Amino acid sequence: MDLFQHSINVILENQHSEGAYIASPSFETYHFCWLRDGSFIAYSMDKAGQFASAEAFYRWVGRVITRYATKVDVLEGMLGRGEKPDYTAILNTRFSLEGFEEERGDDGEWGNFQVDGYGSWLWGLAEHVKMTGDRSLLFELIDPIKTTVRYLQMVWQLPNYDCWEEHPEYLHPYSLASIYGGLKAVSEFADIPLLTESARQAAVLAGEVKHFLKQFAIQDGRFSKHLFPAQKGQPVKPVLNSGVDASLLGLALPYAVFDLIDPAVSVTIQAIEKDLHLPGGGVYRYKEDVYYGGGEWILLTAWLGWYYVLTGKKDQAREMLKWIESTAAENGDLAEQVNVHLLAPDHFEPWVEKWGQVASPLLWSHAMTIILQKAIDVMSL
Ligand code: BGC
Image (cartoon, rainbow, N blue to C red; front, top):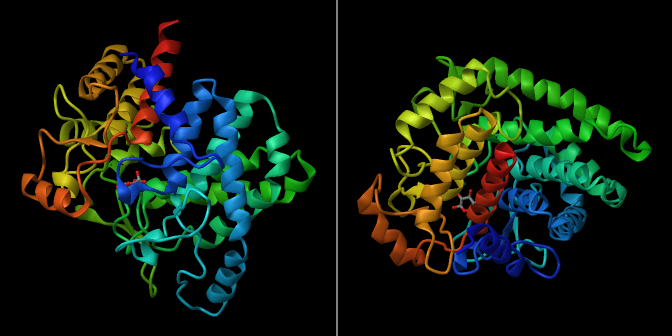
């Protein structure tokens, strides 16, 4: 089984004709396109030379943001009046494949307030432009790019759900890093006349976000998972008992708020290795994870492997890939998580009863595996 080729096939076969990537075709709850998953999936397609697929995704995002852009005006009004924004004012984290807000089952409207995907898509789009050398897509997407910068300016300091769709009461360094990555990318488009002003604003804001993270997100030498937002005269401060989370990798890779060799990155990686990487196995999200019993996540294992490649730890990177390959189903499909060594075994069955078997294939798992494989290939040249 050629896992690399199978991963490309799974992604292409599950891309909607309008460009959206379904999170997982076999799992009813994931029959949406998330901006977070989608941006990494599109990035992997670019890495695999499937530029048309990535381009179709970015066009789809552009149409969706344009469709809901007036919500940003509503948001501006609500914030101006000192009101707490509601679902009429936030841009959703996920959309139907046709590009509409459409919620099913018990998904609350507020679960949709997650800001990271709006940074991720800008970051991914800029990577696409760099990899293809074709800037024409930027001209097409000027309005949604501007809308996103304006939106991020308004929401970046508001508490919202994290990338695991939890803890809406906090700010999350991972999400802020995504915002930084997206804004930094836009700041480099200043020479495109219609984007000059947004690029300038993005540069200023990216600087503020970076400063904010340096000032508040490091505790005991490593990154915190959550921060208390500033409230009623109380300054922002880290949530001390929040433990390490594997998504904190994002602060260095790919969003580059901090260098790969920054001491805070190294100390965070050590904590991830110690607390979340099962020796000889995969990577957990965080210690208290109970979702499907809290298994090892394939996409996070690939993400750590990607970090290993870029820091010259070739053997460790290959080990990650080997473990991922060992988890593939007979047809090559990769699941969201592997439920053999669970952190909270009692929680496994209740989730199966609620939503069915663990999502497989998960497109984001396949995407991260492509990214890791490509990074290893480049390292081996
Ligand atoms: C994860 C999200 C992800 C979504 C779709 C959720 O369970 O927490 O990070 O975007 O699934 O894959």
